[in-house]
Image (cartoon, rainbow, N blue to C red):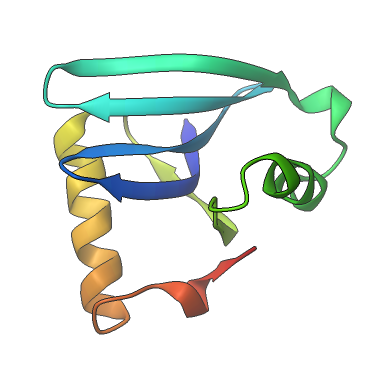
Length: 100
């Protein structure tokens, strides 16, 4: 099962980080498809919080969920529904649910 760690809506496409087994991956998803552009072995980061802190230094706009959320796939529609739910749950923003 995949776990979403971070997601950002970028003008109709989505970017972020996902946990996929023993690796963290950076993704870019658009209606045209899924692109996994970077891979980070979990063994090099210890805990999730450490990974989020390290990536936050290199990608200061990335905001991570306090707790990763299980997702069924990295499809465009799946991510679109997550972003919609986040907006409704937080009145248009989800900053309380995420940490830097």
